[in-house]
Each structure stands twice: as structure tokens, then as C-alpha cells.
Image (cartoon, rainbow over all chains, first blue to last red):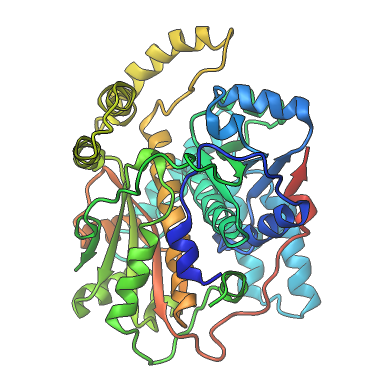
Length: 235
Length: 235
């Protein structure tokens, strides 16, 4: 399907038909999402495809039994993590080595700068230490442009969640290109979802997708966007 | 262009040719990004297309003169905001009224729940008050699923930034569909960028795009993704 057709066709669908989504299409769309741009190529995302009926039931409950979850043929939970960077970094470096491209700059970036940005403890002590270090870095910032963060854990979470969202948009679009639909949900009990999926404090649930084929009344109303002049600014 | 072709073709391009990007294509791609899914349809994004050469120079400087900025034909700054919800909410309600669809549930959602989630002050006092309120809400959470946030300002920022990222992915993909390329940059001096664009504390710079046509050596190396089994989990 033509790209701009897909853009126009994608809507958040809240009621799905009983049509099954072929496994191959689920896999194709999940794989497509992983080709999104992402921060330092650290791929801090995870996609949980909920296949066990008991687990699915629990997720639907944690989504307050909303139609988009209840009628969904498939459910996918998108998760962002601040703790997979180490494994992924090692794999990235291995790949650089294989292709003989591990130049000193890249090595330093992944072995010094990334760990400094990504290491965090549960209680935020490292965040406070980084804050103090940044007091000194910020002095340099009076004279020339500098990097301002991430300092605190929550700033890192914003970074990994926005990277994960890039992949999420790919996922939704890929489904439309394959003739299916989705609803990205943010209304859920994150604590319960994390418990169901056995996720630690180093992960956030970014959004949960109901996936299937749109029912006739599955889209609630026409698409409404505010005047684009309000949000696209030429300066 | 076919959707999955676009998915495969999109790469972060760090060196651009001197080929201009037609205005009409820039507009088409910016408009396409606004059709992304977004939280409660509140469209908390802004896209600053930097057209004045002096401003562009300043942004390039705030991006540390990296190639992706320096060689870019066009630069777009994606911003997320926690303060435009009120204006947008009013426009949404107006639209609901026009189509006679402002049911009590929707009215309550936009007039009570959204303000509770989105109101924040600069110093985080409202965040602390919400935290206390959530102590009581969380008691209910022992017995049934509940919404756990956003409580603090930074949680709301994570929400609006991830919504903005959905639009960002559309933007990058749309450019590829039109035969152009981009590089999403996260390495920039946010404080300086905010000053250049006159942005307040209620906004975050989500990413900055260099836009243009890829030079032959504009993509640094082959695409590398870790084994998809590490991040796609069937449970």
C-alpha cells in the first residue's frame, strides 16, 4: 500500500471484528517496528505479544476491560527499558569489531559516555551524583554548547520511551499496510501490567496495543486535528 | 512508495547533498506527521521548521556542528508541550459540539480528568499534592485496576514526548516516501535550543531533524539490529 494512503488510513480502532490476525502478519509488523530510528542504536524497547489466554485476560482487566482491549484479536505491550543497554551495547561493539569499524571515537562513546548516561540505581542516588557533576559541566555551558543530560533516571526514561514510541508508530502503520488495525492504549494499570509481565523497576510500559480488524463502528467519530498553523511553525 | 519499502529504506543520514528539499514536500511531510496517534487527541506537539539562516546557524551550533545538522538543507525541531492541552482541549470540545457528540462521559473526561492530569506548576508543588491524592487512589488499587499516573510533571513530560515521537516517526517515514532523508538528533544543547526558539519550561525538545538528500557516504555503516528474539517476546 502507498505510504501516504497508510498515513491517512491509520485510525485508533476501538472495536474489532472476530477476524484473526495471521501469525505471519503479526511477526512482519513486529519486525518492521524494530527498524525505527533509535537513540545511539541501543534499541531499548521490548514488545510483548500476549498469546496465553490467561495472560491476555489479565491484561484486558488491567486495561479496565475497555473495548479496544476486550475485542482485540491480539494484544501487544510495548515496553521501554533503561537496563538492556549493556547487553545491546556489547552486541553493537561486537558488530563494529566484525566489520573492522570500531574506531576510538565509537569505542569511547559506548564504553564511557553511554554508561555514564545509562547507569542508575533504584533510589536515585546516582541521579543526584550526576546532578552534582552537571553543576560543573554547566559552567562550561556558559561559554559553549554542551549536553545537558540525561541526569536523572526519569530523564533517561523519557529518552527510552520516546525511542520506543518511534517503533510503536511503525508497528501501527505496518498493521494498516497489511490490512489490519490497532488501538494504542495509555489507559491501563501500569503496576498490574508490570506484575503480569514480570517487569522490573527499570522498565516502563509505553503503550498497549489492541490489534485486529476494525468493526464498522470501530472508529469513534471523524478524525479531528487542530489547525496545523498552531503546531507547525516556520521560524 | 510501498510501505515496507519505506520502512527498509529509512536510515539515519548524517551527510546530505546540496539538493534542495521542495517547500511542498516539507509541508506534506510535516502535515503527515500530525496524523499520528496521540494521547487523548491533545496533540501536544510542535514542529519548528527553521527557515531564517541566522536561526539555522544557531541551531547548528547548538547541535555541536555535527554533520547531520551542518550539511542539512532543512532543520526541524520537534517539541513536546504540557501547556497546549487547554487550547487544544477547547478546540476538541468545540468540534464535539459541532457534530453533536459531546456525551457526558467525554465532557467529564476533558473537563475534569485531563485538567487533573495536565495542570502543573514550575516548582512541582502540584506534583506533590497529586502524589498525596494518589496515596488514597492507590488504596483502591489493592482491590481493582486503577490509573497510576501521571503524577509528577516529569511523568507527564514522558507522555507528551512519547506522543510527539509517534509523529516524529511519521515525519521521517514521509520524507523517505518522498525521496528524501533525515537524521533525528538527540545530541544538542537543549537549554540553548529552547532559548533560540523562545520555549518555556513547559516544553521539551524531543529531537532535531536534519533533512535533505543522502550523500553517497551519508549513512555510517550497515544497519545493525540485535536478534529480534531478544526484544519480541511471545508470552
